[in-house]
Each structure stands twice: as C-alpha cells, then as structure tokens.
Amino acid sequence: MPEKDQEELVISKPVSAAMMAGAGRLSFTNITALAPMVRVGTLPMRLLALEYGADVVYCEELIDIKMAQCHRVVNEVLDVVDFVAPDDRVMFRTCEREKDRVVFQMGTADPDRALIVARLVEKDVAAIDVNMGCPKEYSTKGGMGAALLSDPDKIEAILKKLVTGVSIPVTCKIRILPSLEETVSLVRRIEKTGVTAVAIHGRLKEERPRHPLHCDYIQAVARAVSIPVIANGGSLDLVKTNADIEEFRKATGASSVMLARAAMWNASVFCNTGPLPLERVMEDYLKYAFQYNNHVFNTKYCLCQMLRDKVESPLGKQLQAAQTNAEISEAYGLQEFYQQTQDQLRAKRDVLQSFTQPDQLVMDGDVSTLAVKFQRREYPAHITPKMFLLEWSRKEKLQKPLYEMAQRSQDRAFQSTVTIGEKKYRSSRWEKSKKFAEQAAAVVCLRVLGVPEGRIGEEDSGLVCKRKREVKINGTTEEEGCHKRHVADGQQETDDSEDHHKPETPARTTAEFMRSFSGVCWTSCDAAVVGFLHLKASQFIRDVLMKLHVVVQTAFVFPVFH
Image 1 (cartoon, one colour):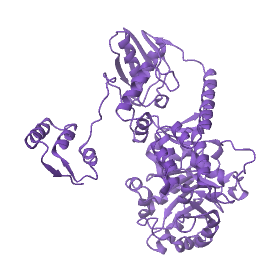
Image 2 (cartoon, rainbow, N blue to C red):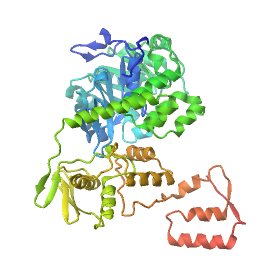
Image 3 (cartoon, rainbow, N blue to C red):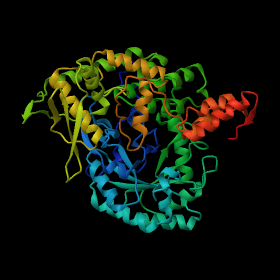
Image 4 (cartoon, one colour):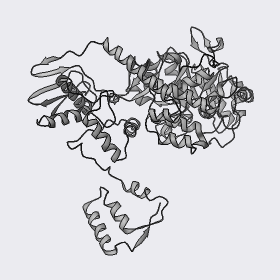
C-alpha cells in the first residue's frame, strides 16, 4: 500500500464478519463489489477499490484459452503472483493483500477448459466467476459471455463442473432475458448447480448504458432464489455517491451491489466518508501502478477514464503525451515517489540476485551451455540479445552468428545453438518458440563472453543509444513498441534483421494511407501518387500510378471516399 501521511485518514475497512463464511470462504451477502471491467480491473484499480472500502473486487474477464496456457510465477521483486503466457506476457497479476477478496472472472464456453483454469488460480484467489453477460463481440464470438444466455444446458454444465471441481466459491454474472419469467427460470436453474451467488446486470444483452435499468427484474429474481443476488448496472442513473449504494440495493431487493463505471470514474465511491477529489484518487491509483510495475498504457487508459470530459485539459494532454511511467509521474508531480519506488525495486532485485547461485557453465561436447530462459520483459522494446551479439561480431570482424534449431517431439519445444568465432553456445532450457530459443542462445554466448546483453538497467551502450535515435526518427517510442508487443494476442517480439542498424519506414496499408487523409475531401494527384508509392503494392500498380502522375502532374484532383 502506498505510503500515506501519518495524520491522513485511513479509509480502508477491515473484512466484516458477514464477508466470510465457513472456513474462511468468501460470502457474497451484504457486500459492495468492484465489477469486472476489461482493461480497468487490473491490480492497481483493485487495490485502490479495497483501500477505499470495497468488500470484494473482480478482475477483468480473462479468456480460458489464454489462461490455460499460462504458468504460475512468484515474482519476489514485486511480491506478486503472475500467470505468464508462453510469449512471456503477464495475463493475470495478484498479491497477498487481495487474496481473500479477489474474484477471478473468466470467459469460457467449455466446462473442461474452465476447470483447468479454475484449478490453476484457485490457490491465489477467493472465488471463481463465469462471465455470462458481456454483450461485446470479443466475448460472444467464441460462444462466451452473453452468448451463453441462449444455451442454458451449457451454463449448467460449466457451473456444475466448477462447483464440484474446486474448493472455493463459484459464481456467475448474467444479464436479464427478454421476459421476467425466462430470467427467473434461468436463475433458478443456475441456483441448482450449487453456485454461491449470482450477479445480475439489469439490462438485456441488446441494451446499453443509455437504456433504463430494469430494477423490477432484479427484484423478482432476488425474491425467487435463496442465494445472494448482486445487483449491477446502476452507475449512470442510480449510483453517483456512496450514499446511493444502499438506495440501489433497496430498489433492487438484492443482497449486494456491484459497481462498474461509478467506480471507474472515481473509486472513492466505495468510501463511506464521502467522495475524494479526483486529483487525490488519481495520485493514489498511480502509487499502486508504480509500486506494482503496471504497464504504462494500461495506466494511461485508466487515468483517461477517470478524467472523462477533462481529458483535453492541460493535465489530460500531458497525460496523453506521456510515453513512460516516469513521464506520467511528472504530469502528476510524483517524480520523487516514482524514483523512490524504482530504487526500492532495484535494490530488492539486487539482494535477491545476490542470494541466487550463478549459472554454472557446462561444456556439452564442444558447446558452452548455461541454464538460461529468455525473458522478454527484461529488455527494452527496441533491443534484443541477438542484436547485441550481431553488433559485437561486427566490431570483432567475425562472421555473423549462425543459429541452428532443434525441436523436442514430446512438447514441440525449441532449443537453439549459436556458432560464432568457431565456438558454439546454447541454453539447456527449452523455449516455446524458435525466436525465443535463438534469443536464449544469444544470451548464453554474451554471458560467457562477458559482453553486455542489453537488459534494462544495464549501462547504455552505443547500440542502445543508436536504437533510441532510430526509433525516435521512426516515431515509435520504446513504450509504444512494448505496448504493441503486449497487446497482440500470441504476438512475440519482432526478430532483428541483419541490417537492424538501418532505420526502417513501416509499411503502410491502403487503409492506413486513406485514413491519413481523414477530414480532407480532396487531395492532389501528386500527393496521392507519392503516398501510394510507399505502399507494398505490386510493381504493375506502382508503374501505372507513376505514369498517371507524369501525365496529369499536380493539376488534377480527385475525391477520397471514407
């Protein structure tokens, strides 16, 4: 928890007796919860909501297929547990402070896969929730979210599998159906699966926040079942302050209340002493974001949601321009806190590394081997060990590194051996991709040779400085590059090429080119031809456009349709 002044009011409240049932099991009776929100419900926001008084917090919806591929990693530097994908992205991060109060929400349409994911995380969360109400395409296109509402048999199969398969409470979140009778019937069927509670968003899957909430549906369901019903969907019309939460509970007859947008805009809505100034809330959020190394683009997104119509204010513009956590800290006057946090994390990492046995060099025939696994997050977005090794080989006037690949049949993992200067190097650890295997081999070579490999925290070398200049020329910052790498599903780092030292102009698609003229109805043929010549078009099209350019020069203009 971020440091507070000693005289400052402590807002967070202890876990009430009503929250816990049985042997430490989470109860959903008479609680106020932070709703699951995509991109918003990450660790900093969840901890902020708990600090301000939320009883329970839900993580953002995480898809079962992605989570099933993750492995659990204890991050001792940050004091967190990470669930890391094969491409080294952290899909879910949690910590001890929320362990007994965080609900893991998954998107799933498969009972067996749902159970695999639930068992993966059940030791680190308080409950499992299944998303059965999200109307967005990214959820419904795989038969998940609100798509499940039309398949009650699958709903029953998923929930029964989870209830009997894990030791922690299982819940689900739905939307109402077209008729009151259908809604009540579905929830009664859900209750029979053995779930601990059900959350209901009081709108149809076709409705949006601008449509009125159907409190009568939630009220009818609450009367019809004996399990706790959690009311959701009142942020815009019914809940603006903490005092409104109880009124919303009474209006719906629900056991508990779940808040989404009201909490996203100002998480101090959970504070029973009244709302806090937005500036204070954003600063408190940032302290958690810095402390737990939250990704800069996720931090910016959450802050922009808080700013709402003030996003074009001087502060909002400074926030939007920021590309690093350090720049965000400057916008909010938190440079000192940010630097202290970074120093503490760096010192902790150094201490932990001092207790770690160094990698033992092993000679496997004529191959130098270390137990090294390539961790992409340890390197800047524009730097890889392969690039450092290539640059070093050029300086030493050696042949460029030669990589050989082996694949293990039982799990299709990869291992690479790099040859340079007639010597061979490889990692004894197998990787999930060819690219990562080559990077691991390069790391081994660089460490054996005692050459810097470009990790974050190492003193900038000439190569690092050169790459920074190049990405600046290309208009892509380090954080933007990192963001592109993290948000692409299954995407891995872009392999460096032989001439990586030359600035490259990114290829532009036709759609991107046309969008670049947004707001302009007419443009000169001259500009159009020059633009199209930057596309990866066929040579024939390029020749035709050039001839057209020569004939009409710049006198002819034509419309651009959007």
